[in-house]
Image (cartoon, rainbow, N blue to C red; front, side, top):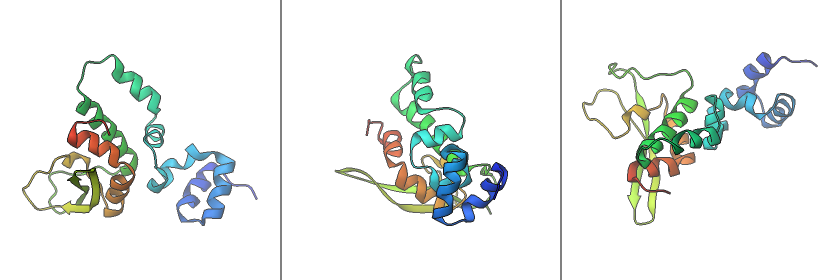
Length: 158
C-alpha cells in the first residue's frame, strides 16, 4: 500500500496508535507534530512546528538585553501558537469561549489546577492573550508546559 504525506496527515489524528507508529517511521516525527496538538510535549516540539528550534530561540535572546519574564512570555507565545494551530481568538467577540490554564501558587511552586474559560466577563486575566479554543488544549498546555508558565508568572527560573 502506498500513501502520500498529505493522506497520512489527514489519517493521523483519527487512527490507532499502532498505525501512528508506522506513519511516524515512514514520514518522520516532525511531519505529524501539528496534526494533533497532543503530540506537542516539549518546547522544542513547539519550536519545530513554528519553524525554528529551541537552540535558535535561545541564541536569539543571548544578545538582546531584555528581562527574564519577557523571554518567558515569548516562549509561551510559541507554545500557544503551536497548540492553537490556525485558531486565533477574537477578543471582541463575547460569544467566543477562550480557555486558559489555571494555576495555584504554593510553597512547592506552581501547580496546574485545571482550565477555565471566559466569553462575557469584563475581567482581565493575566496572560489572557495566551488563551486556547478548547478546554482540552488549555489543559494540555497547563499540564505539559507548567514550567514555562511558572517562569512567566513568578519571574523566577523553574
